[in-house]
Image (cartoon, rainbow, N blue to C red; front, side, top):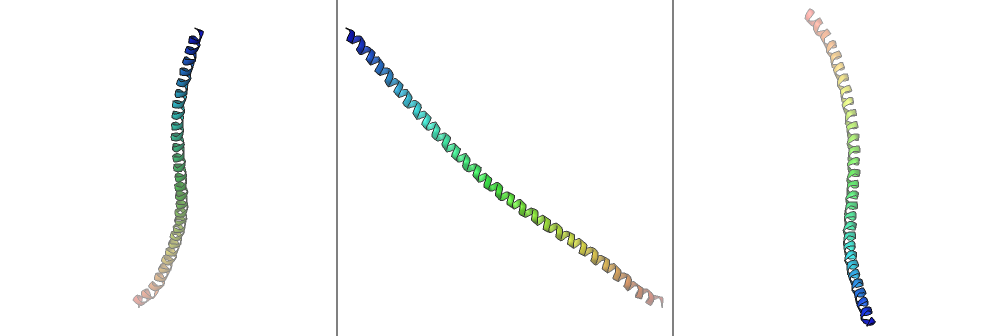
Length: 108
C-alpha cells in the first residue's frame, strides 16, 4: 500500500504547512501591533519635539525683549545719574553764590 504512505506524507505536509501559516499569522500580528505602537510613539515624540521647539522660540523672543528692556533701563539710569550730577553741581554753584551775599550782610 504505497498510497497509504503517500497519504500520510501528504497529511504530515498539510499539518506542517498549517502550523507554519498559524506561526506566520501570529508573527505578522505581533509585528503589526509593534509597528503601530512604534509609529504612535514616534508621532507623539515628534509632537513633543515640535511643542518644545515652539516653547524655546517663545522663550528666546522673551529673552530678547527683556534684554532690550534691560538696555533701555540701563540707559535711563545713566541719564538719570547724569542729570542728578548736573543738578547737584548747579545747586552747589547756586549755594556758593548765595553764601557771598549772606557773608557780606553778616560782615556789615
